[in-house]
Image (tube, rainbow, N blue to C red):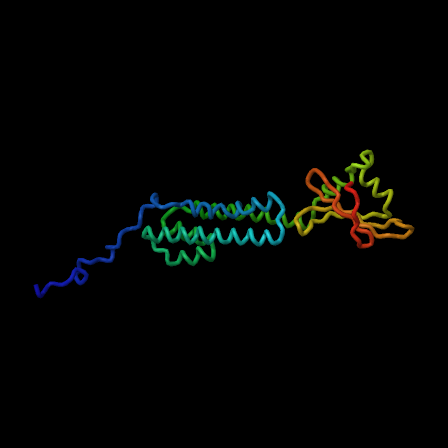
Length: 227
């Protein structure tokens, strides 16, 4: 009995006594597939309506929080299942695509969700590029919509005809406001109270219609009936 030793001091102890990781079919992959789809999903709300600058910041904060939550939650689930995730937590916090590729490698899975992230990210970048171009160079179709359109008070005349009759050498410009809406500005000079007066008329434009928004005379906002 004096020569007995504990089990952990004998050759019977081997390094592989640690239980093997759970089978992959017992691990929930929903989180990583949502992560893989987020780049394109994140573009849905901004393109379904107009967001102010503050709303944009809140929206991006929500998306960032969701990415961190999904990544960290998935990493912890893998760790509980017996996988070595020492490096994964860093990538879950810092860089989603690297996390997805490393996760697939560690779990000996195919790179489907990692490749899906690359595809959805590429599509989202196309959305962003087109949105930026639209911001810098709004479509001239908006301008044609207003020029060839008519007003409630003068249904038999185009807006261009009305403007040309009252404003000298009018200038037409399409802009995108800070609120995300598209506007057509008409600037020029007119006689008002026997004085030369600078005028700016602004219409808010959608893809199929336009509405009166504002009018300034010499920089002073005017309140008039909707036209």
